Amino acid sequence: PLIVQAAREHAGIGLDRDSVVRSKRTLRRQVQYILREYQQPALVQHFLPGREFNISVVGGKRLRVLPLAEVDYSTLPRSIPPIMSYAAKWMEDSSEYQNTRAMCPADVKPALARRLRELAETAFRTVGGWGYGRVDIRVDENGDPRVIDVNCNASLDDEVALARSALAAGIEYPHLLQWILDIALERAPSEIRQPMH
Image (cartoon, rainbow, N blue to C red):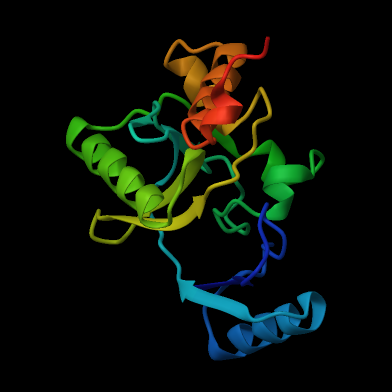
């Protein structure tokens, strides 16, 4: 199977029940839908069937990987593909939203956890990430983790990914925000970093 999405969107926009395709006919139909509805290229990738993890990172010169979160699709009806679609993120009345949850900290064997943390840090650094972000990783057919998204502008809502992982690490929300501000100041010109009189 392949997954088809809008190349320049985020937050699940353009991802729905028809995004995972298994034939040339459905691939063609979904690509045409993206081109028509979103007026942008369609991104087509191999669909990874394994576990999905959200890995939050915070830091500047020194990066810290927060406790791992796993997306649990186990209660989704079989007719709905296990993806973080627009409905799963935003439509509270949908089956996708009601049957998709994040477990943090994730129950992961130490060897896989180490690989996930290392891959998340490498991916975040590779794209020039600074301050905070989230790296989404799926496990492929061979059990190897693969990056599916690096989000350098992840939600700072106090009840979702980054804040949830910080809380699992014992970091309260106000302290998380202060930490991110302090990291931002690492890059600020010296006149900005001077205390106000």
